[in-house]
Length: 374
Image 1: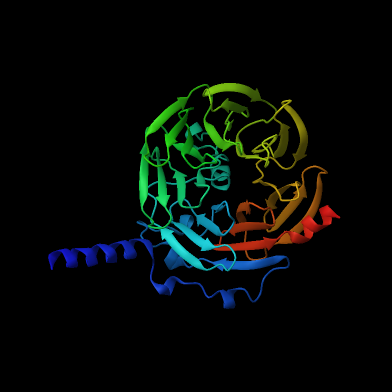
Image 2: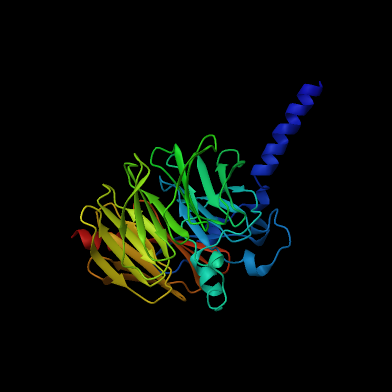
């Protein structure tokens, strides 16, 4: 009898820890009636959902959607803010899936840190962080770096985390290898650590960066690891030997986005200097440069047709650019409030934006893609 009661208690505990009450469900039929032009889905995140399990609730931290990330298959969208939990959503219907507990320390993104860096005495550890959230290739795990020097790798089925410990300063970027077996993490301690993603065992530390590691990305075949740094350089590492191969220079200041194309021959980078640069990995040359305002929050995508698109925000406007031609392909108007975060879907056909009023809007990029294939 005791064993049966314990089993029931354990099951109830797991359900209560992972899934929130049905009162948190979103009424998508109602919320999608009045979409802005070009939008196809609107997710309104309730205050109750955002503050679930959060201690010392402050409106300063719970209203803005400051990080967005699509799963590799494009079916799931993750959203979070500095001190709120990670929420998972169906990227097609906007249906709420589950919450991955609360954070014990902030996850910073570019917008937040841009506000910080307006103050001249901002220390290096509070400067821009980049890709500090990541899905595993199969979508079964979700990782985030944190200011408490740890990495949490969440099981998206159970909502329970595994802690990765070893960095001596804030963890500013994380990325899974294409086969999902390795997790790479960059830190304000200027190092990159490689971990066994299943066991959390530390495998290797890559040393050589002279500033904090602000972004990180694997090539599609897993043979190369690229990292952006606070000093504006991009370093490439050979994963077979764990050795530094080359350094790409051109950016001025922190690089917060890195993305390889599908065959690994090109690397796109976006920096706080307001530029998006596309590099030919075989020649180390810059193929394209898209310039914008300093501090612009960029998102970059290599879409299914091979075109390179970038998106930036300007208060209520979201602008989508063709990086190759430098021409603006589309402008969307978000008439509710300011934009905080941007993310392209893996196929480049959808753009997700998060704003300062606990809202996520998904925009249809198919007309732009069709224009570029004709």
